[in-house]
Image (cartoon, rainbow, N blue to C red; front, side, top):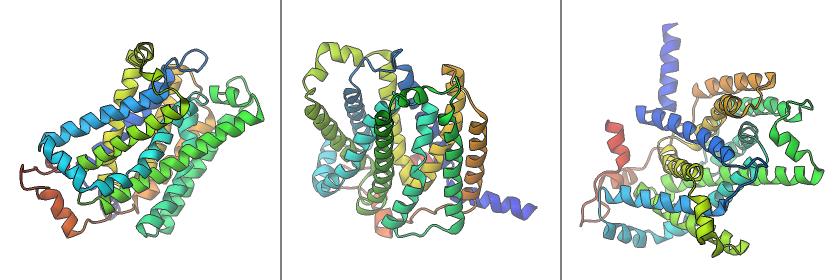
Length: 369
């Protein structure tokens, strides 16, 4: 019995190698749960938005950029940041791929949360689990074990069980059910948007991790964040330009609608998500990220029931049980992070340039707390 307990402790230690990584995991979940609830709370009675959602996404990326610059300049200087941007301009160009994917993902989040309640929305996103596993194998050339695949498939099964709620024909059907039942065309469009968002989430998350640990491993994490957010701002500005709303979006009336307290909370929460995600992918991996998203489902269901009166059906409880069991199986054989090469690991400790000196990244400071 004692050996089993020590084995479980060892497995959880592999899944969360440090106390900081466990804290990042919990914080990541909490922020995502808040996001769905805040976006839903900002809607009108007809589930529409009284503000330009693309502008909100763009301003959120601007906020993330300023935070990343401030964190970098805490240990260095702004001229050294400009030096890093010029030196690693190729890495910055590579970041346009995940930046564009996240641009689509963040904007589609508003669209899909206007169609589905937060619980159903997070449920449908869980179908990215198997896709993430496949992409993880292709990019990192690491085969998932049989137990890992069983846990991923169980997680998908749990999401399918919860999906029974969507087909509920009773009067307790969720908001998402009523809205997508209007026509077969609207159902197809809603399904397409969820599919696109799912693919964007999988590919962007794993590709971002690939850059953090591969092509850009020698680049300071805050500089990589700067690359991501500059590219994201450009992508969102492009979306506004295509919509023909680039100038209109920054008119006084439009900005006044964005600067409401609820919308500001959405931007602050989303900015925190962007920052914590980079730490998540640096300390953990995309497979653990999918399980964090799955656990969000059960907490979102409870909060939506308390705040919005969205019912919790028996299938929801069964889905939570299956998802929890899948997490237990996965924790017994987690995907171990890639070990950075000696050169990459050393580059994180050494100054990026000789003058001025750049101290060690905040990640290490947090691990020592």
